[in-house]
Every structure is written in structure tokens, then in C-alpha cells.
Image (cartoon, rainbow, N blue to C red; front, side, top):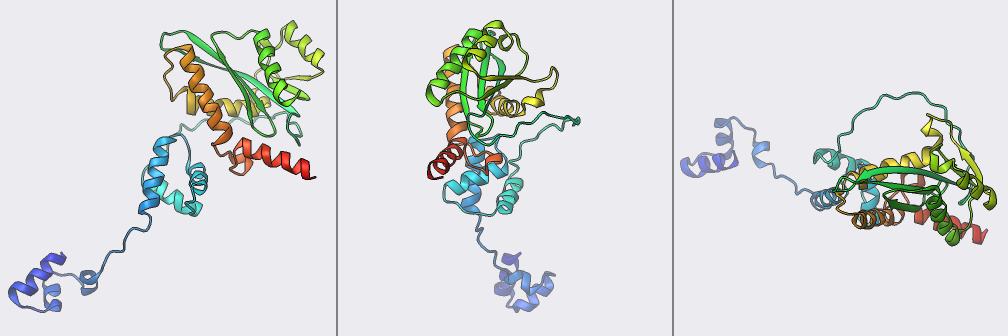
Length: 271
């Protein structure tokens, strides 16, 4: 339209006002100069980051951008996130009212949560993943991966964690055969660790590890193709490092579990 007005002015010698009137546009529209997109760099960086972390929402991407010295308001990131169609479609689930038995957690190693996840290798062989989570700091303490995990293998994995950070006061888990075996019960008794078995059919009584397993499934197991057991161990271990050290956690004020644990440790020392 601007070219048409300019052409009429030059070719026929009419005024700008006359040309605009003939073309039925206002002079304000003709003279309007579009402003440069001040969000261009931020938009590009957001798109790149969202493609690297396709399962992260706008709040978590906002936290990552702030870590990269790209300050912007939450709503600004949300508008760009929606405008670029980066939101991941999620199926709405029917919500059923549940009453969970909650523990009053105030420190690390107060309670560990255990649960298993399953997946399949490219060969069709199944694998199991034992997840151990500190219920207060949300740290993933262990991800043991194998084709089968007996109760003795579970206790060996727990002993390896205990050697690094000490014993928990309690362990919360479901009623699977590995976690109700004589070996596991006697091991907890010998270690003087309280064992809390949730009620059958009520997984939200172990909500911390259930939530963790949801992230593990969504961001790692469903996002990767495991060729061999060694490949599965390598990729799951890499995701564990990312979860603890890079992934902002909403319940921790968008800090990583490692950052939250470090702040907690320094406050204990100074206190």
C-alpha cells in the first residue's frame, strides 16, 4: 500500500493527501513505521531452549533463561511461549479426591521414598529402574537400572547411598515383593530405619517419588530409545545428573535439588 501511494505521487504528480484519499487509506496508516521486534533475540533463545527441553513448561523455561542472564517477566515469557506454539499438549485426567498420609518434613535424610519404573529395550527385553528420592530436598539419590532388581539388589543400592550421605530416619515405599521380603524387612531393622509401607491402591501416599517417576517417564524414558542395557544406564544416569543439577524444581522455588541442598547445608553450618 505504501508503494502504491508513492507511485501515485511520483507518476501523476498528486499530493500525498490526494493519493491516500484515492486509495482509501488514512495518512496516519501511510506514515506508520513499524517498530523493531524487541523480543526477537529472546524469542529465538526461547525457541532453541524449548526444542532442547520439549517437556518443560513456560515457568521452568523462564527459570532457565534467568540463569542465562536473560531477565524477562514471567508473563512476557508466557506470551512468547503461547505465540510460538511451544506448549505441549497434555491430556486432562479425571481428578479423584484422595487423602494422603503426609509427613512433616523439616530436614534432609529424614525420609527417603522408593519406587520402581519399567521400560523396554530395543530388543524387547524389559528393564526396571529403582528410584530413591529424598522427600525433603527432592534430590534423586539413586537410579538403579537392570533387567531385574531383587530385594538384595535394592539393599545394596541403599547401602551405596548411605555410604555417601548417611542413613535416613525412615523409608517410605509400596508393598511390592522386593520391599516386603524378609531380607528387606530385616535389613531395615538392623539399620534401625523406620519402614513406612503405604496402603495398597493409594500411590499418592508416596507422592514425592510418584511425582519424580512421572518426570522420569515424561522426560527420559519416553524421550529415549534404549538399544542395550548399557545404553539405558548411560542415558538414565545423564538425565539424573540433569535433574539434580540443572532442572529447576517448582516446589523448591525454581532451584535445582542440588542448589536447595547446598543452601540447606550452609544454613545448618552458619546456624
